[in-house]
Figure 1 (tube, rainbow, N blue to C red):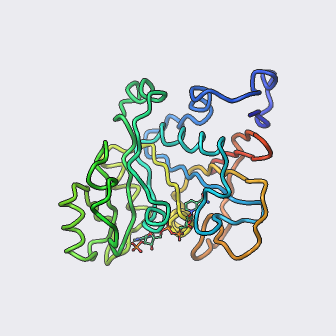
Figure 2 (cartoon, rainbow, N blue to C red):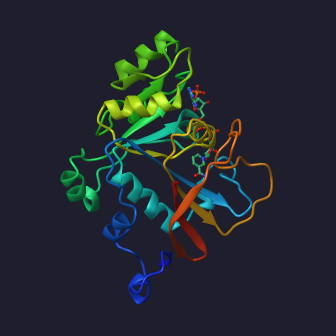
Figure 3 (cartoon, rainbow, N blue to C red):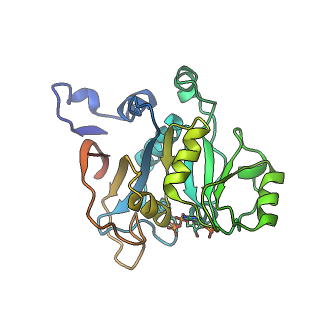
Length: 254
Ligand SMILES: NC(=O)c1ccc[n+]([C@@H]2O[C@H](COP(=O)([O-])OP(=O)(O)OC[C@H]3O[C@@H](n4cnc5c(N)ncnc54)[C@H](OP(=O)(O)O)[C@@H]3O)[C@@H](O)[C@H]2O)c1
């Protein structure tokens, strides 16, 4: 892996070869802010596909997964839409030795909590994600979600957070509710329908985008869907890493 941006005097031989998880954790450190910081991590093909055959794995690579793991290792909570949880078979986040000391120093628990956003609560609450996580899983839903499903989530051990009226979650309120529970370093892994709502609500602070050197054609979703914003929101390039033609970019909201 090599750093393409920012270019410094140190951008040289030191950057070649596989980066240690410590080096990646430094490169992706959360900024020191008082309030919550919402980062998204997504992968896209050159022609904008965010999945192939319903999964992101075919358009990912080993370095992408290493960064994916690093971003989890730095986060207080991982926020995912219910469809991604269902299709990608989400499991609880693991405690990893490589991030243990950093997490203790940052006052974090051993692994990030997973927060699932769902209106229907049509989720299998007997899965390990809900019954045996290291850190209790959060379920973000609306006040009007089916009461029997709310009860099922709670009896599985999940913490149900009401963050909207009706069955819908208000994305800005979801961020506030997570922050109120001490989660400042937020990471969303999508999917596109959820990410589009964070974008439209103007609460996305950072976009970590892997550009895969692949073309798939077809009509797969882009990384963010839903209604478009009135005015395109500008982001500034923070860094770009490269490995085997994959670009690992990081953009911050200006
Ligand atoms: N390229 C990447 O980096 C990447 C990342 C993640 C996922 N993906 C791919 O994207 C696909 C899935 O993404 P998706 O966009 O279809 O779905 P998604 O965003 O993961 O999940 C959509 C679901 O989340 C819940 N939801 C979203 N917004 C909500 C709100 N405001 N209030 C209440 N519930 C809300 C709803 O769940 P209920 O139906 O339960 O109400 C909705 O059906 C998969 O193919 C996956 O492989 C790609």
